[in-house]
Amino acid sequence: MDDQRLGQTPLAHLTKDAIGFTAATLGRISHALSRARGEFADLTIERDVAYGGGQRLDIWKQRDGGPAVLFLHGGGFQQLDKQSHWAFSERFARMGAVVFNADYRLAPEHRHPAAATDARDALAWVRAHAAGYGADPSQLIVAGASAGANLALGLAITERVQAAVLFSGLLQVTDMPRLYRSRASVPLAIRARMACIGVEYPPLGKGWELPAIEDPTLDPLLHVERRGEDGLPPLFVSTGSVDNVLEDSLRLCARLSAVPHELDVLPGFGHAFQGFLFSEPVRAMWRRCARFLAAQGLRVRY
Image: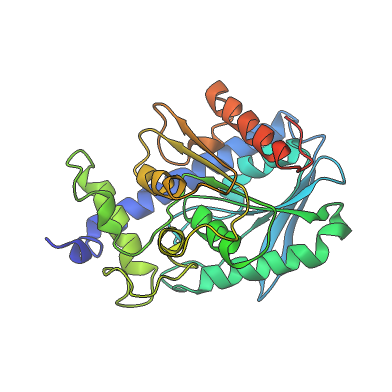
């Protein structure tokens, strides 16, 4: 079966639904348990603030005066939301940042560039309103997990920000089968899930061939590889050694020389592990992230 057909099979959609349901459920259960234990008592959380064309974001903070972080959730551009990724907001807030955790339109109902347009609108909204929520708009960080890291890197290329944090980034959407063609160990269900992203997110007919002109809002990795690193802010890039999209982070950092960056590969961890705050290796990764940002002149704690 060819790759495009694989992404349209019932297995692809069953896997997508199962992964999405599991991730969302675990995220909500852990959020409810943390609230019940009073772990958010020292945080201010304002939910469902409208931005742009009717999308919404949550605002997390522990204190005023820190950097503004725009965080974009993962889910293959098709699933999940700001609430399923609450742990990222909590951790950035404890660094001293004011976090704007944004939803965006999802595929296949809304194909590219809908999510990228929403990310750009969210960033514009944060610039305009950050000071009103106690953040320093001159210290603006874009961050994201998986698909959200793709959107964050696109913003880092096209907009002026002070830093970007990329967690388990899926940084190239065209030619998704590149991630499993030469790896017999990738289970069929995971291959089908990856292929499904290539079917449902890019503009129709654009997901299976490398583009002649790279689009930084779709394939930011290709843009950096072909156009260079000029204009990029400092980058903290986190991934796991058994992450199925590990190669995207490795390719990105291999292209960087002049831009301050740190590649943090956690041995034995898989995709989007950074929200597992119960794990000491994960908490240590967050401390390394904070130290990197502080070294770039951003006012964060670690």
